[in-house]
Image (cartoon, rainbow, N blue to C red):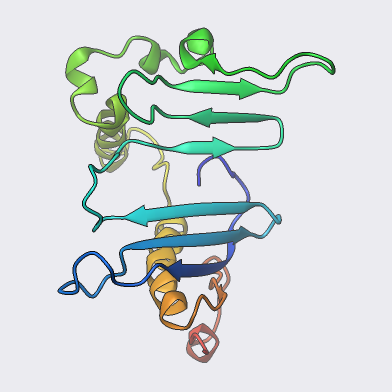
Length: 186
């Protein structure tokens, strides 16, 4: 969400695959959640925590009209980026390492110890930023409104999937409203 500064989630729609892997769990095998942003952008979240195959915990992709990032999908794969080329040039993936000089300083000098925290070291920096914000050394990168909206994605996804993928409007936590206006109507 931090890639979309100044934007907000307008609605959430979630679809589930059903219960096929293990009937003991009330969670559907796989869900796909679509987030419609106020700007019209679309975000797709896919969650699969029950299937029997190995979980690829660190796979992420970010796609736009002029570029795309993909995390490694498996053994031997690497972080890669596609950036729109000049007309007539052949499209090609490039390793993320080609863009090392554009990374924030702390990612350029990341240590093996920091990488062990998870997600290629970014978990270390999230924890570090939280502690620094709690000490008043820097502004929190996630404010209370972001936290409410991001949490509401899970809650609205559950309501949506239980109602056949119905699109659920995201409350605007930044806007003052009465208690009655905050009630989610199905």
